[in-house]
Image (cartoon, rainbow, N blue to C red; front, side, top):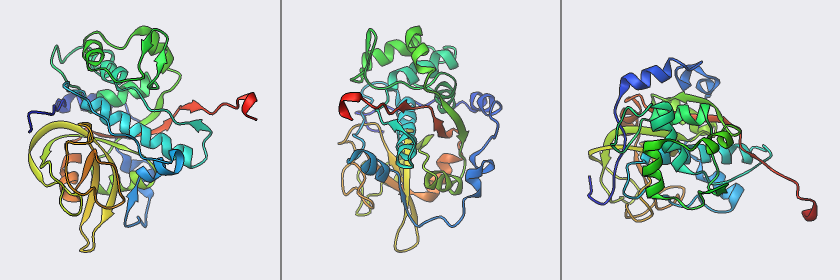
Length: 298
């Protein structure tokens, strides 16, 4: 692990099991997603951003705080929102604020069990966006969330999401969250337009090879977003992981599909092992931000 970047995931399978017990379906393979057959050789969720926005989602940087679980959830939900809009749902895309999710996962869901240590659990973040909701990255009352703040993230990580923001976020729940535990189920979810938050202790090299791939190396207690997959000429499959350490953490070619600079491709067997840790999530049926018809624009 490099000294310049922080992880922030707690491996607490008992806590995850408590959340899984509340789900209508305990795994994505048990939902209609699991019936998806004839998967294409590649799937790039960032193409939804190109279609809807005309550009990629910008790189995110969690800074010097272990808030990666919230950043991975935000990225995954944003991809789901983009896929919904691309399929014709009448919403406006807005980037999402990670601080409320980080705070809510730790305090409202986790009840402060992690104490003063940075970090959270993927299942807690999934529960918060399901039961409390999401918020846009903009000014909301007395809270200016338009720019990410490490200090606010750390402060709210101890005190929880402010009550007035909870009231706003409940209008925008992510109505369905489900765990993903295998590479096959992850591919099925991606093809159906769902971003995936993956928490694990798998580390990687920081340099990308000619295929945009980083090799499994070391240990990170970390969360990232799985945003696509591809098949190389030799038949080997790779998954794309969006990281939250800014645009310059990883170096080298970005690889197939021309994704952004903030992540890397990884071998599917490695990702399958990461998913098997049991704290990876898809986010569906986002109650987003309805598109408004402004009279003076008609």
